[in-house]
Image 1 (tube, rainbow, N blue to C red):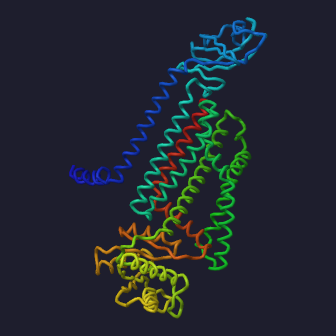
Image 2 (image 1 turned 120 degrees about the horizontal axis):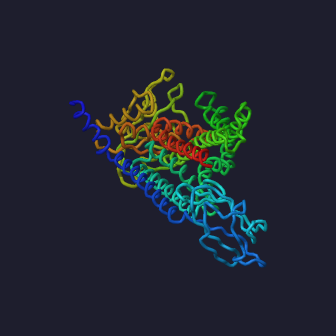
Length: 513
């Protein structure tokens, strides 16, 4: 009992007081209420309109509407529906039917009672609820256009909420991992929204809507194939250049691996089809059999996963470029310079010199605009194959560029980027705990460094120095992998919802179609 009283405040703190989780809870609750409201609207609309069905046949000069008889395929009176109205329009004859009892019936429109002079036919199915569908169990029902419209409305709200969360995250910090996660999810949901908007005008019934949703990943994949092909060529080419210039290593092979995965994803549906085609006793050609629906489900969940991760990659590229182009506000008290490998004689490599020059450039820009001086914190410890600490080497270069030694605070203990940021902040706090901080690094590294600062709870803005273009492809992929790992719960939940939805819809088709 005591443990319950102790745990309760912690739960309240985590799920009720925490503003971010509280906002997420409100948004999820809103989507559930919206989904329920739309479901109620669809149900009411179908029950009002769906228990009648209008069938139109072409108007014929030699026949009047009164001459046309309606019988079933056996020449008898219809038993599951009854004719409740006839209307003549400019180009057609319209016949209105109401449901009588559950069942199905082929209606024949003829000029004689026996149904031999057939002018048209129509297959109607009356559900247990009294709804009348045409041609299929999940075929067109009067008023059922409300279903795809409701799906579009729901998806529009999902996209809007995800973009709102992305914008809110960006306002808080452009470096936090949530920015990529929310933007990628929003792009993915927006693609679904566009597919459904494109199909509303050509709506063909509930089964058409379900198949559109299930096959949306395949449609998106086909539409994006030219872009994916160009991206594959660019990524692979840049990675080959990187391998030639920088040498072979696992991290330098990331772009090449991604190119291969994109190619594999393009041919994955065909591969799955061929594998299942060759399984003995597994007939995927039987359109009413389980194997056909299982193949469709498996193909689309794999395609969905690939498209989803491509959307996350696009979001990563967008956020990385935004972070690299960002210029911090000119109100900083400190600017740290993130170290990297130095030469054997203790001088800076071109990459590290570029970072340092960028920090000096920012300091001069701030001085010119606001008159405010800044402290430099060159950061980096001594590696096993280095003659001195990277921080010390950077400091010597700063002094050679005319920076006063009393404006340089050396950090020479760190071994990685996260320690660079943490130890530099500790040095800054000793001078001015309230001081604002920026950091200088290579442009492709700004997002990663900023993310580390955010995770450390350190408010720091980054500025990026230019580098070779062939570094970017691998940098994007590293950020992409890091985001998948850091935000794995969000990605898992979102993907799980998509895959469960696809599975449920595939089962509905299997049972009712």
